[in-house]
Length: 125
Image (tube, rainbow, N blue to C red; front, side):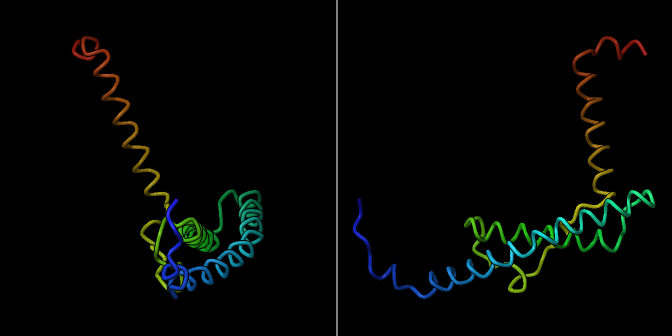
């Protein structure tokens, strides 16, 4: 076992991260009821209108990305502190268009796979 280095224990950056981790852990715990509340509201919109509320959907996507940033920071997967210290990457939002694109890609892969398994059947057409 290596001896403990006193310089490592007294680094301000490590203690600042610890304070940020405590703050973001509290924020994360505070956000969980909102996640459940928004999911219930979305279900009610879906139940009565057949579609989800677009404005609430954008808020939910933002909240999802924010919680992902928090979890990554708390679990040392990222050195960057979450919002408001860094922007939330809205390009990572999941949209219906991106889901449709993924569905098309999966269909293409499935077709290619079927062609490679049965090349003689496809050549008869």
